[in-house]
Length: 139
Ligand code: SF4
Ligand code: SF4
Figure (cartoon, rainbow, N blue to C red):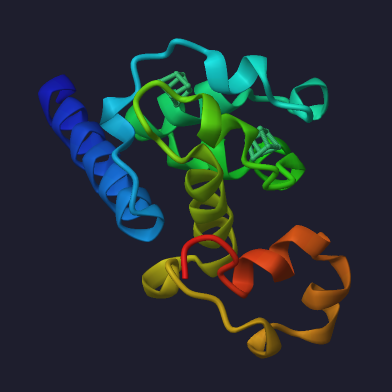
């Protein structure tokens, strides 16, 4: 029973990393947790999970926990983290991909048609959601 659960978790994690890598075009597994992205982030004080922790959670396949964080909506796409990463990972694109995954769901989690959402949903979405829907970074 335990073995089955471990295999399933690994499969989910692998699938989630692959999904985010596909949307963002970034190699998440290259991150070795130096923390430079978080150290330079002007929004870190407002995040419940820091940028390097987002990468780690994605590596571990913590899909649900990560997509429910406030942090993915706090990033303002200033690109400071991108310029600091010694591994060349563009973290802002990864976070944008996480927003897409959070908004899209199901089979369409790499794409969002903002006008297909209900007026109620659009009225409560943070502005960065609309920006992400327009694929500011990953188009
Ligand atoms: S792009 Fe987002 S995560 Fe990166 S430094 Fe700027 S606010 Fe922080
Ligand atoms: S700067 Fe790059 S390598 Fe360092 S923790 Fe952030 S994403 Fe990982």
